[in-house]
Length: 112
Image 1 (cartoon, rainbow, N blue to C red):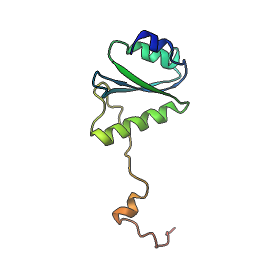
Image 2 (image 1 turned 45 degrees about the vertical axis):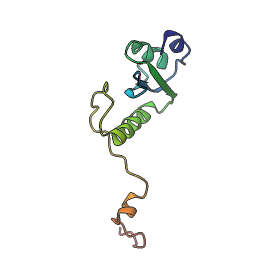
Image 3 (image 1 turned 180 degrees about the vertical axis):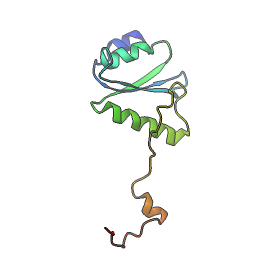
């Protein structure tokens, strides 16, 4: 991650992940409506703290940001080391997990 890379980033809204020298995610962030110069401006602030980055231009940045945090927490059991706890994130569960656990009988009619 260097100044040249950052200068080539779009000035749009989205989400990003920063990595350390071993390419492990250390921070997940978002460039929201308050971000000056969008992704480019957000990454400029992290120039000295990360070696690698990836980004995604996304107008639904807030939802995508929370989704990335939930996936990271589900996979690693914790948040990235530089992220503070944003409060309740929700919980990921695979589609149809109720049926696969036997909690729901798929043949039973739904009661109203």
